[in-house]
Length: 185
Image 1 (cartoon, rainbow, N blue to C red):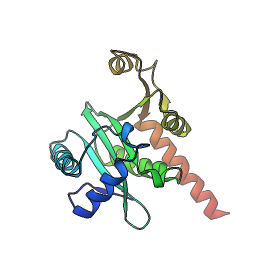
Image 2 (cartoon, one colour):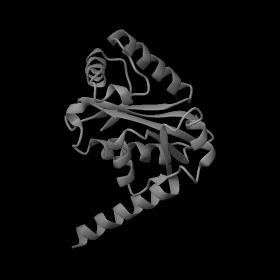
Image 3 (cartoon, rainbow, N blue to C red):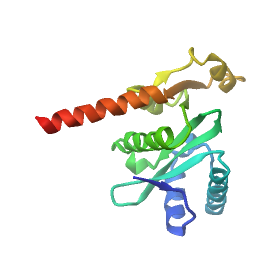
Image 4 (tube, helix red, strand yellow):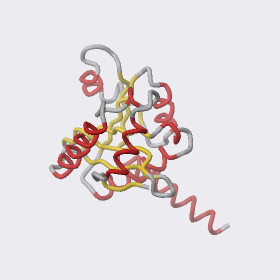
């Protein structure tokens, strides 16, 4: 479902085409206006990950085809900001939640990450609704007021959400317990 980013002609071509769809492009953090720029940004992303500045993965469908990316940006003091986009043909098919679960497991259980923040544009109802459905997500506009105010220093554009490691861990434990109970039945 996830793999490290790489500069592969086929993968980059597919991801660039998916990213430039008008329903996706406005919500992509690192926009590329040409294929060459996309390849350059991908190289920069890989280098930044090597330097510990971010973590980036390609999201794959069940056949191993690239369908989007999931990233943790601005890593600092055990926290970072999530950035995810999935190509339009794959919207509403459950890939987002599966990718997040897998990515969060990697971040929380294989790295020093303690908190994942999501900044979501107030006008992006689709993403806000998806975030609020996740049982381990907290609206942090009030509880992380200083971060919220930094994000909205010029004007109120974003809602802030937080995923703490302990809440995600509890979610995973409950999932495993439910699976064990289902197998016993």
